[in-house]
Length: 306
View 1 (cartoon, rainbow, N blue to C red):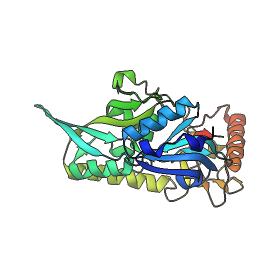
View 2: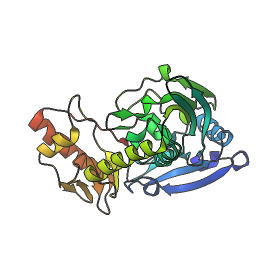
View 3: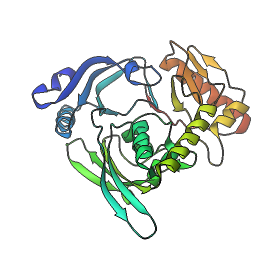
View 4: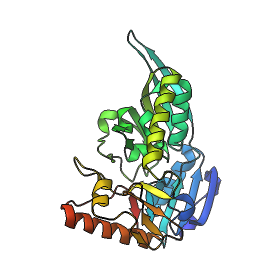
């Protein structure tokens, strides 16, 4: 059975696209077509896609914001699911005690992290200011435990709602989530639906000031206006991947349309016409140079589909 044949639009609310170029859905602007791309508008529609795909043994890939993703030039077989229609952000509980107030927020997986930051800044909710400037969605941030300037999304997580391939929804509490550096134990077989996060109440002025400071630091040290997938490699224990790449003389190195950024060496940018093949070759070359010079084996931070 063709992948296209399993999508029953009678049980689906949202948009379906066929042979959709993944380059339109990744910040690197790289990637060939996926057989089917589904944009469900509600959990029931997502459930129907997940169950139909499982019944026919067709792979399903849950797409976040595509901001830390490298996709093969020949594309992906199966179904890519975008949850960009899952965008609710709301306060579900206010807690007061003698020392400070806290707020519990419900955030759907498709809400963008910049939008969440803007919401917390406007309302004076503190705890994720250091994540300002990180693109992508909340679901993607939870999946990879996004972080910056010593803070990580795990610091504010209370629980995460997920859906499995059978369409069953379950709630994972924080102590069930094995967060580590740029990763979690949330399986690729699960779709993250939403997260409950706990933030502290503070003045809007203080929160806004910290957000501005973190954004300023990012703009001074990272190529925020270039087409990249963020940091390519994880920082090794006690070290900096960017510094190691710089010391290995890799800044400005180029393969095809992909270049090691001169501002931050752990960012590879698509200067135009870059391909997945170019990116992989550049990664391999940089890894080898760092290994030879410092004996460190760099590990990818980006998600790669080849």
